Length: 250
Length: 380
Image 1: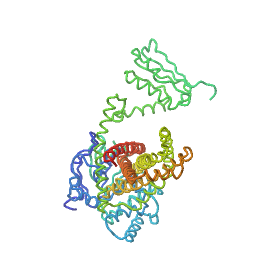
Image 2: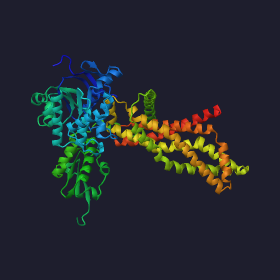
Image 3: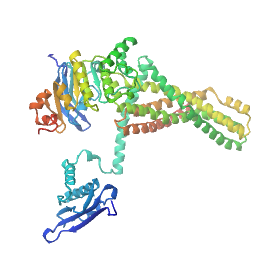
Image 4: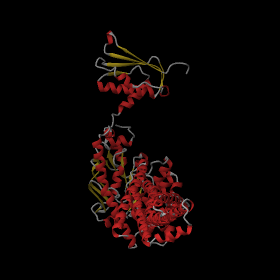
């Protein structure tokens, strides 16, 4: 394990005006982890994700990528750190005026300066990887929910990021599609060594793919548990066990 | 169904052994499609003499949410007054549903915005909103300016195809509506002028009035207002929807400037096309003036033509084109600003579109006044 953790969050607080969403978050994500951020609706999972990827400035605290503080960095340094992140948004967030191929190609063309033919090859490969070979010329509006998610994943992985942040991978997907997406996530970690942060409340995903996690509590507005989800299920905080068993144990 | 009456409600105060109890008899069909009594009518009866109420449902034939909402309303009133409720005679299903509705207490957060505000509070809130909005507007202005400077330095990145698509959408597709409005405005100007000029027998000056009016002022203003409604609203709705879909966040997280990529092509398209539409509008207006002069006021076609040429100096075109360019920039600014500020709901997109048109027309009017005064002072 590295001496400097891949992602470190120190005493992070997030707020909308006077309303504190979460405070005092402290956790570490190691390289190659599939790290789950779990919690009930409205607990601040997505807000935490937005603070991690640079979309929303936290009220206090810091987010460190390999020891570099994101929110205290200059704009150029932030840009460089963002380049190491790939993000899959909840609805895919594909650019609706571009075809799938253009969606995946845009970040590659922006950052690599490769000739168009090489970019096209990479795009075709990335789309094939997520099972969308041959869909290059479709527009996002022509895709089903599951295809949008996979296309979003292809775009997030376009630049081979070291860290992949995924917001609610299974939301709106049927159980089989959701499971295939989970398998794809694990495969990416195993083969590329990508660190993956998954924000979710889907129990099947949490228990099958996660190897570390935090639980954000919506009442105390703090994290009340951290560790492997299976351990949390067996011997964690009562609230977390309650959540992981759909209210089975109180 | 038969001829049986809908709901029946009977109140009976308790007697000797159950003094202080109000018996509420519910009979017949309590269904939302059968009409329902208002719980308020009953609340007056829940005075200090009542300590307990008991529902009686022996004659109840049918029930649905109508019964439940009525009973729940009474239960709430009883809870406020500290009156005990006995619902043990209601059907079991109804009892369970009522218990479920009571199980989770009312969210304080959700009720926070309840209640009407006084006039002063509303004015205060509106002022605060405006003051909060001003720095945002200036911030956006700054970002757009930087983006335009990047463009001049050749470092702004957007797709040429987007620019061409916007140009097509903004320019040629707006020709029909611009034609109709400009023709009618030209017609009105000609009539208006003819009526006054007739008094001094100088009807030929209709040509001057229409030409200078349309080219210098009215063409740009009409085009500006049409494009504000047509394209400004469209820009706000497009960018607003992208905001809802997190597409703008996706640009930000990839470090691609959404301003360069989305706002710049729209801004350029309008700054290029609105002046051209302004010219076109002036031309159509003059045609309308010609038509009116020739057919109604017996002015010769050639006379009108030479008078128009005499009236139109280069500076009139320069003024019209400069105004068109500024209005185009204002519309793109307002549309893109409101789109980028859009919240994350369908309602917010609608609000963004409305607000874009209002802002654009306001900005156009302010710019028109300033430019008219400045040009006058400069003698242009």
